[in-house]
Image (cartoon, rainbow, N blue to C red; front, side, top):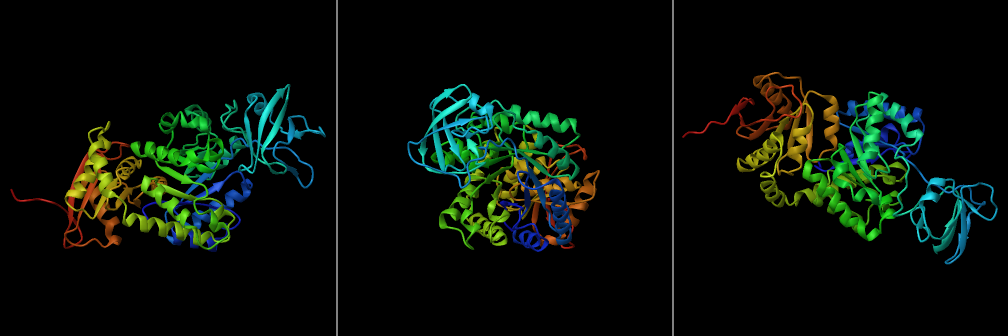
Length: 482
């Protein structure tokens, strides 16, 4: 089993039971539903299907709702589109029906740009430079020629757009996301912590308690990464839109920076967009794509994401399987010793008891050559803190919460076991040993267990113990002669 988690987007190519079942078997741990497409009825049916199949297959599957966010698009362009050449001049206006102009139905965008601003169409297939702004019109020069079609997306790199990260549609979608009990909600167009807090306030008003993942896809967010990280439960390196808003050559280092910032606090991070893009049409990826996935894993990403590959591609199951195979192969040579050195440095910089215990549990597990680290948790926090140190041995979380079990499906290296609620140390050890039985631990194997005492309190881990598997399969405390 890969320790790196795999997020797969559900779409027309994968929204049938047989394909979902095969994707789960291939290694999908998180299913992404893109609210930019589809209707509520379809989303509800997909969630129901995903939950039923995961339960029937005995798999833990988290479901991520990805809000559409504001989408800036051109209006109608004449039938067949317009072929634009280098240096051609065009005029954009928010007023429809102007025969000599192109409709851009976004007055806020026109207001925000100025002379010399860049306007990127689609994924960069056409580009304009604003020459003059006069009233509500923009006179532009074509700097990247190409075919201009109706309703193409428009980006204005470096322009501060004074618009909300949420649309009226998003606010309605939050109601459905709450009612369907999604495990994560991803917010588009994040520029600062204020955008996240706006969503949080809306969710609080709707009694919606779902972890938020901030999609980093805007240049403004780069200046506020730490403050954004500190108000979310996860981050996504949304490389597609980010690579339009900033120069493409800057994206690799920004990806590394975002991953590192998340690793510092154990905040789950997803690397997304075009990871195996060629598998939309081909059964195998390019060598460059395999290296891209591998490098994201080596950098410390918790999860890698498939978008078109599984939503609309010809090979959704093969794409998931390829992700898993790349991850498993890289994890064999993962530089655990480098992360251990980091861990020893970070252990002197911890700020909470849980962080200190989590760091110590990894070090103790290494010293006693433990088969696994077991984190008993009610919130998932201790498991995430152990995961950020990337220990060599498996991380088993034991939790009485189904929601936490699903949420940990996004965290690197963690397999969460559902256990009955426990109230003292003896009960904790009893439910832990029962949960570990399917993993065929041998007599004499050691495991490191972390827990919070008194039990039942969230986010407090203050106990670490080393136990050995006894001949009868029970746990015994290690006692050494003086």
